[in-house]
Image 1 (cartoon, rainbow, N blue to C red):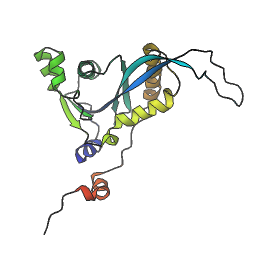
Image 2 (tube, rainbow, N blue to C red):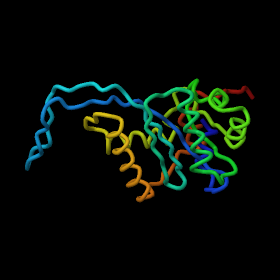
Image 3 (spheres, rainbow, N blue to C red):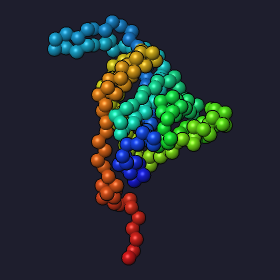
Image 4 (cartoon, one colour):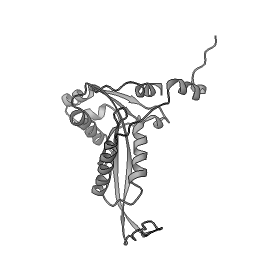
Length: 208
C-alpha cells in the first residue's frame, strides 16, 4: 500500500510517467420499444423490456499528475487484449517516455508474461524494459486512481442503455475528450503517515 501512496506523492516527470490502469465489463442493452422523450418535470423514459446484445470491456488509463486519461473499448478482456493496450500505451501514446510506472491490480492477465504470449520476444522485451509495474494490494483496489476514473465515467456517461460497442465507443470518446479538456487532475492527500495510523492494526508489532 505504501508503495502506491508514495508514487502519488512524487513530482510530475515527463520522462518517468505515472499511469494507472483498470478495466470493467459493460453489458450492451438495446431498446425494444420507443423511447418517450423528456418533458418539463419528467425525465426521458424507456420501455421496461430490452434486449441483451452481449458485453464489451472498458480499459481505463489515467495519468493523475497531468490530468490526462484514455478510454479504450474492446470486445473481450483477455491477456492478449491487455497486452495490445500496453503496447499502444508504450509505443503510441508515450513513445518518448523513458519509463512508465504502471499501477494496476494483481490479476493473472496483468503480468509481463502476457506481452511474450502476444508479441515476438524482441518486441515484448522492448516494451517490458520500459515498464515498472506496481500492483495494488489485495482488497486495495481503492488505491488505483483509474478505478476512481471508471466510477466517474459510469456516473457521468453510462447510466443509460447502450445498445452496441460502437455506441459505447462514441460515448466514452466524447467523455474522454471533455474530461481531458478540463484537465481534471487528482489531488491525492492520503499519505503513508495517514495509512500507518488508519491501518495500525495491520502493522507488525515488535517487543522492545
